[in-house]
Image 1 (cartoon, one colour):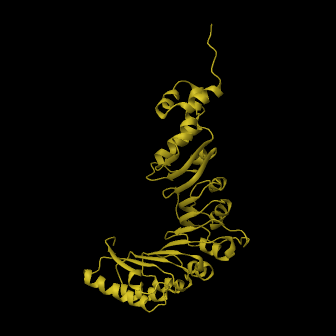
Image 2: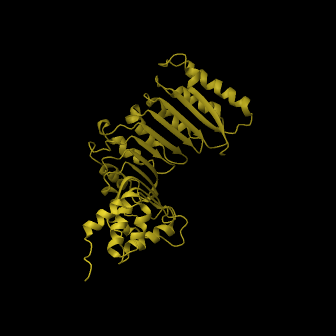
Image 3: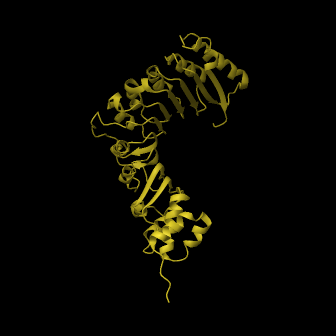
Length: 343
């Protein structure tokens, strides 16, 4: 007499009781057990989807598109996609596997080999807008327009952290309703490309978002978007980090007086030419923030060694000793200047 088959419901209940080793075993029994075991593995153990090379990206894409695949409607906490170093050119079809996948916490998309300054990265950016639980997003790519990034940010109600290193083929922005903003955005990090997104944030009403942390890398990028943003929204920022790959203090210093609520400023100088003391003291004098607690500066190795570093520290401390700080007597503790060997 044939034994009755277990129902899918009973198999699922059994799957909930199994550990990772047992689930990996049952996933190889048959198609029914495989589907339920993989779903259980995904929900309990496979929480991070790491596709950090083109080969892994292509392998997972082919697995998902296979007619015998049991990987359906998957949910992950984090997603990492990186197309380096590509043995073949990645195209849009390689990302079809994203349909039916949900990311609940963070997504990091880094597409360098698949794009150029004149060709957009072949990624289905609209997919990101459907991951409404996403709280952190990092994008390195070439994108057709900053409107795409703006639309994604507005579509994600829980998004708090954004990091961008983006080239835009058409940098012009379509006017957005000023009342539509990234209400929960708290931290924005801009690498040396893609400062255009600040132009979109500038036109938004201050009531639509309150940025607390801003980090910018400065090389050849046009800093007018940063200057305009500073005049409108810098008064809400509490922590400012500026990494200079070139001596662009002339463009940065006009922004600094608007950061009146800042409590921490960090300057990282990653270039080896020019006068550090002149520009660092000018930056210190430009800051008008009575509640500032730290002014940290990182410079390349100085020719004069520790003696030159000590003189630079004293010079900047004198700038803060003249300021009416809320915490009187702590001006000497605000400043920290350190050498780094990154140049």
